[in-house]
Image 1 (cartoon, rainbow, N blue to C red):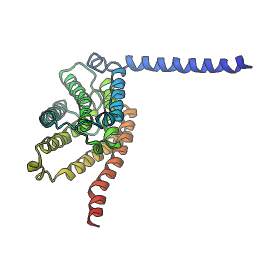
Image 2: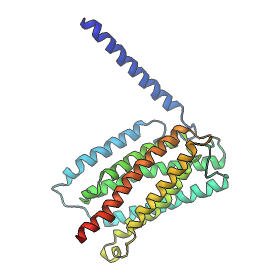
Image 3: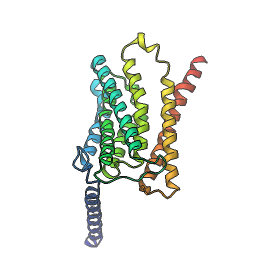
Image 4: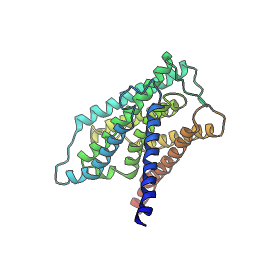
Amino acid sequence: MIRESTAPKVSTMGSMWEAATDFYSWALHNGDPRTDPWLLVYSPVPVILIFAVYLVLVALGPRLMDKREAFTLRSVLLIYNLALVGLSAYMFYEFLVTSVLAGYSYLCQPVDYTDSQLGLRMARVCWWFFFSKVIELLDTIFFIMRKKFNQISFLHVYHHATMIFNWWAGVKYVAGGQAFFIGMLNSFVHIFMYLYYGLAVLGPKVQKYLWWKRYLTLLQLTQFGAIALHSGYNLVTDCPFPDGFNAAVFAYIVSLIILFLNFYYQTYLRRPREKKL
């Protein structure tokens, strides 16, 4: 009886492993051949390792810093944030100009998988956008080093960790097409976001002029709303862009809208009201 009960389990486990390896092989070999040779694109393994290391640092970093002095990192943070302002401005420019030159539709745009100059130009800026999400994981590391643990919320970790997977898949399979719309809007928002962070590093003399932090959150919510409408529209129309990606984007953006609305309510509505009371 033991042999009879264990044999099907071995067979089932073998089938599951075989299915998993078949899917992994399919995922590797059905990507965009233009982007496969680029850094971190061909296999999901490097991104998974980055994700794992990131989560370990999020979990253990505060403990490691518990008995240490907080780092100031003023010069590092100023350079880092201004560099991301420059990178975001560059990506926004590339997304906008390339889409205009290529005659992209802002409602429905299939991916140009050819080796045309504009097709490759759009694919390259999609890769830069993906890589910027890897760089932005340093936001969390700097919070840990400065002992700003209250900044490492579920929203912060969820947003940073998931974006690297979302855009790895974007560059691997749909480097261009209407995915450009997401990158263009997000790059525009990040120009102002990292400018704010860079100015905040300069201390109290500058911070008193940074009253517009609240409006950054509203700008982010506006961006998410536009992306939700964009991907939702393409789910109900006959657009030659993979519905699976549109559905994933729509579901993900809805989750961000919920989380950011909660953040806005807690930070700018509830807490000020409690302080007054």
